[in-house]
Amino acid sequence: MKKFHFIAAVVLAVLALSSCTNTDYKNVIPANAPLVMEVDIRSIAEKSEFQQSKSRQELEKGLSVVVAAKDMDKVKGYIEDPMSMGFDFSEPVYAFMVDMQTLGLTMKVDDEDAVKDFLLLLNKQGMASKPQEKNELISGTLLDDMTYTYDGTTFLLLASLEKSGGAKNTKLAQRLMDQKKEDSFFYVKDVWKTELYGQVKCYACGGNLPKEVMTPLLELFPKNIKPSDVDVVADLNFEKGTATLTTALIAKTDEAQKLIDEANENMSKIEGRYLDKVSDNAVIWMGAGVKGKWLLEKIKANKTLNGLLFASERAVDAGQMLQAIDGDVSLELSASEVNPNDVEYMMYAKLDNSKFLADVDDWKQSHKDFGIDMKDKGNNQYLLTFDGQTYEWGVQDDDLYWGTVQVFNHSKESTGAFLRPYEKAIKSSQVYMLIDLDALGREGGASSVALASQMFGHKLHIKSIILQSWAANGMALTIVQENKDENFLKQLFQ
Picture (cartoon, rainbow, N blue to C red):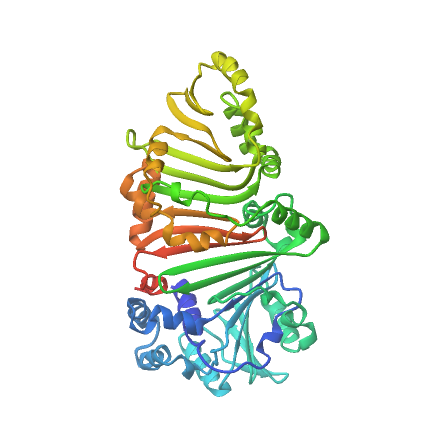
């Protein structure tokens, strides 16, 4: 029951955040805060159509269990008109870490008396202590575990992640409320200098985040960057038909910036050279613009990828092929028409040279040791069979191709329809990946993946997932709805 009291109190507080003009309520966020999140509650409430949602009905039903019957009309009034609680939040609410043991929340006060009435209502339900005035501030506790402090402009809530943080938080709240603007986070850091438009923005100091968070994140960015050398800025934006998470790294050291610059020098915008070669029944496609020599270095530095590279060299000298790449690379995955547990694929790459073809005869000699058969079809085209699978590969003009026979044949019949709606976005990217959940579920493919796509995609009416990188230190993950006019937030709240 106490857990529900906590949830109800927090929900009521969050619902309050929907009104007008900023003064200095952000100044309580310390300059060295390791994590800061900005949330546009008003926009989220509007886009989710919360007031007309089932979630609102369920909230009222749940609150009726813990709120006295005589007070329910007042609570319903707060839900209907959050401004009546005294908070002014057309400006965002900010959640932040003071250190890695204390969580803070700050919001703007519009009507100090209304805030007091709201807290007295929580007190009657056993959710908060009565507000007490001291040192020109009004303070108290929420569910015994959190400390609230406010004045005529700022409401500050502190929660300790330690068991004995109550007394500490009272002193900390006083210090933060007295903090000068010059010592505040937004005065010192211009973290939103990257263009972010979402309803949720987040800043994190890489060196202060847990390794289990930073390690997988940095795997997506240039190698060898240390968490302590970067800050992370993220943005979550909900629009009609899409939800997009954008992430960017901000270098704090020359070493980190050098690694980012090096990656950008070896990556390029996708020209779209192979877009019309992707078969119409593809389920996953990935494209990039890259210099092969640099790419090979990064593959060899990764234990897993280097193992795959080594295994492939039973058939061809993949290292030579990779070094020759300079420009567009296209990789398509399709469902097998023979075995639903198999995946067929096709790769194209723009070459700087094809010198590796001079060694093909030597490759043929070594194939006998591995039970591999490669037939020469003429004009630098080959048919390769090993591990029970047959591949078409070869070089035409400046293009290397390699893939299973099924996709190779389908690619020759392609109308280019699979990627046509995304062409403009693809050509503005260094890396672009499209997962068509509709096609994946429909075509089958690796059965476990197909099943997951059906359960996840159709439940939330998701058509596809897109991963896009426009620079070495920035990327975006977009969820695309089946209905382009649908609202992802509305679905979550229904």
